Amino acid sequence: MSESNQKRSFRLEILEKLSSLITAGFGLVAALAWNEVILELFNTVFPKQNALLGKLIYAIIVTVIVVIVTVKIGNLIGKIKGRDSNNKDNA
Image (cartoon, rainbow, N blue to C red):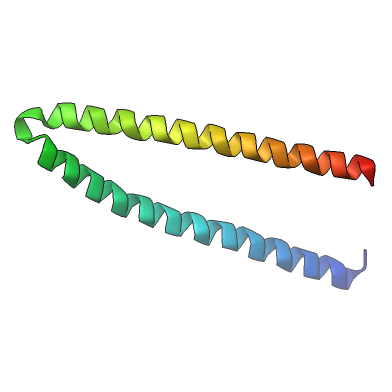
């Protein structure tokens, strides 16, 4: 690989990493905003006397959703990688 191609590849890698970091940052901001809304909803549904119960239910629901989404994304990535390796073998 020539020096020019190495520089271009390095710049591309930096841009890809920056893009990932920026996207993750915006995702965190969105998650924090939704967290505030959902907490306020639970505080409305579960008044101060039941605040601990509301927070517990909230934590369980969020955990279940995160686990389901993580498993689904993992399965999707596995399928895509499987297709990619099959395509490389057939090429």
